[in-house]
Image (cartoon, rainbow, N blue to C red; front, side):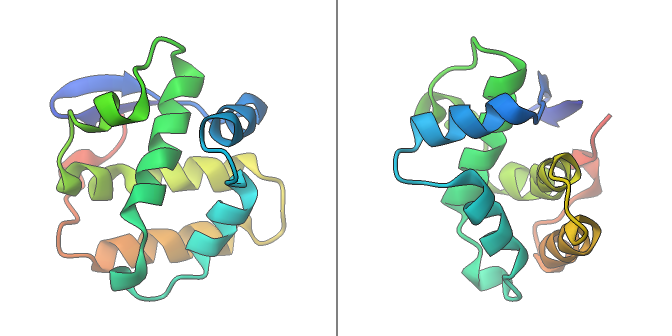
Length: 126
């Protein structure tokens, strides 16, 4: 999948290696646990955007191993861009996880971010 960030096309992918990339880079974090915790959030003020940024970075790193370190990479974006692409990226994660609840969780995440005032349709994926 291709997403647009800061007028640049960035390839993102979520697969089994994403789990290893995420947990290797962010010691002490558990990818699946973090994703399911996000799906339980009902208030946009409680969304940990640093966590969302890490999930987006891990998907970019999965697709392109030359993706720079998180801090260098995320410095190229503004907060609205992260918020704008988050639902698509999180949906990718849910789609890749085979559970009966994935559709409901993905819908909750999308609804949560749509309520956020920075939501912009120009961040739709290609």
